[in-house]
Length: 363
Image (cartoon, rainbow, N blue to C red; front, side):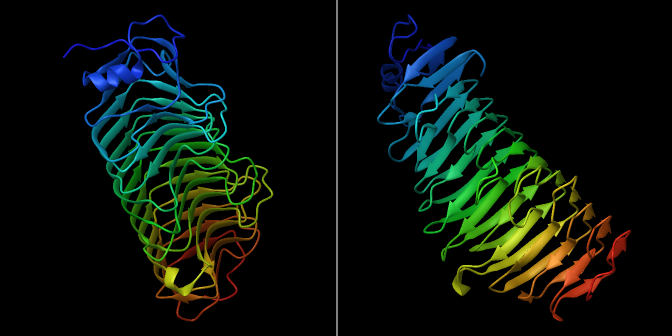
């Protein structure tokens, strides 16, 4: 199949528009340069390909009233976007790739800058985000509040200088199932604003976020929390991550490496969370290594074999509403306050190691 050259609003002298190229059904080849776009609508089977994410640039039109570069608009399947750069041009609410009910979609080796990178809307399924760079976006990747998607793999990406969050699964009126977040780097996340500054954030509703695996990632200088698990989440695994310098001069409350807390309603309680094998280093501003508490029960939370250093308050804080906790094999060093503190007898602390820290007030 012949690749087609593309253009947007005729800022580069190429023979065919992006929309015409998509509509033709042929693969869309961006040969380099910057093409200005305002909402090209993808078709099922669209394949967009460039020569590299620093060379083949799609840029959102200044003042765009429909502020998306690429949009599925409705259910589309078998989409591939490879080796392109996307610049939302500081347009208010600008979105680089808006995936509405997209199915079997892969975005690979692309670069996203300014505003929103990838936005997941509706009943998306089988989404792969692999080897991309999200640079100076607001949110790198976000799920829309009422979306009801599943089966997302986010692997080997770099999220850097994002002013809100790297990844935000924010579905208080929707749901999300089976997300795998692995092998990514999150560097300098947040701008010291309320309710942001998360490397990965998850907040669900009564239909729940069910099944999120966060394994083998590196989090550097997230200004609030590297990993934030809030209401409406269950079956969460947080393992083998490296977290360093959470806080980085921020003034947020509950600055910590891993945060697990439910505060909205009993029917959005958190359950079955494992935090294991993580290395969490504070530098100057981290209050807690791991914070697990909230106004509603946390059921079946396991915290094992983590190494935590340099917390200002507690290495591990286990709050007042706990059910079925197991805490074992953790090493906590150089906490200003107690290494591990637990407030409820149902919590089980087995073989935990606390060194160069004050002893926990209860264990």
